[in-house]
Length: 115
Image 1 (cartoon, rainbow, N blue to C red):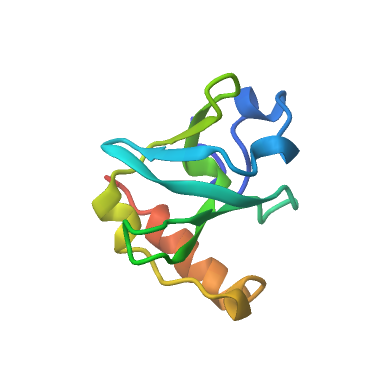
Image 2: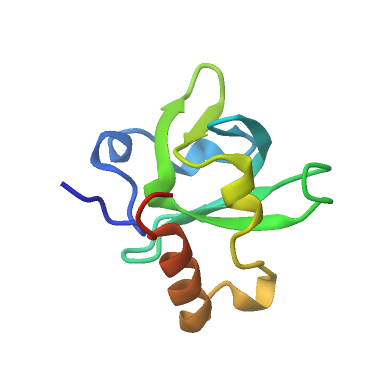
């Protein structure tokens, strides 16, 4: 059954999502940064990730649906995408955070089959 890209997966929703700030974020092929902010708004749930040096200190918006698991004791978030896929996503800036067009572009990018 497909998952909703803009919602936390059911097995994650049971945990405390507010406390993810500072967690290290791992793509399938290694760490990409740390969680700066978590948004649990219905239909728009996501995390903002500070990437540090990996992609020149950029902030990235990642839809909640690409998070596969949380490791609370280890303070880690695991994704179902690799670094290359994340680095090619539509670029984020603070002005775009609530822009419906940006959400549509980001959703179309991450929702593509075979990613």
